[in-house]
Length: 124
Image (cartoon, rainbow, N blue to C red; front, side):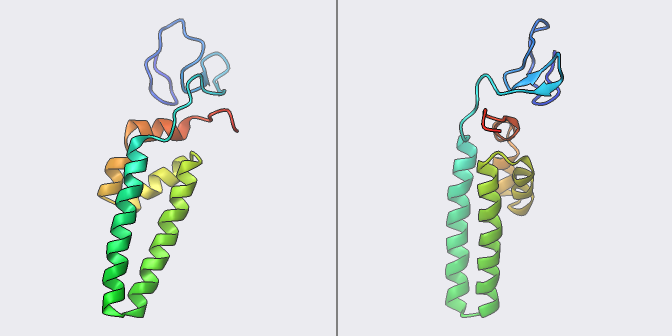
């Protein structure tokens, strides 16, 4: 049977999915195998940092105050969403995929990133 939460295929006799979804109670429990921060998300962080630095250097070289302010605002927004993503916010994952299109979409819409966000990891 397919898990309605993470779409993992489970044997028909399974009582719980690896993501923590309980088939009998139809509630999410603590995951059996909590996933660490996926490599895709770590790679996306490096790409975002490099692009922000390049854009910031270009803005600084032109001396245009509005561009510098725009880079700072963009960086604050992306970093805030990234920190929410690390805390397993699925909404932050989707927002980052849209805001950092097309590069972010490739990283943040992966199955591993989605599974990471839907797991509770026993802390909530």
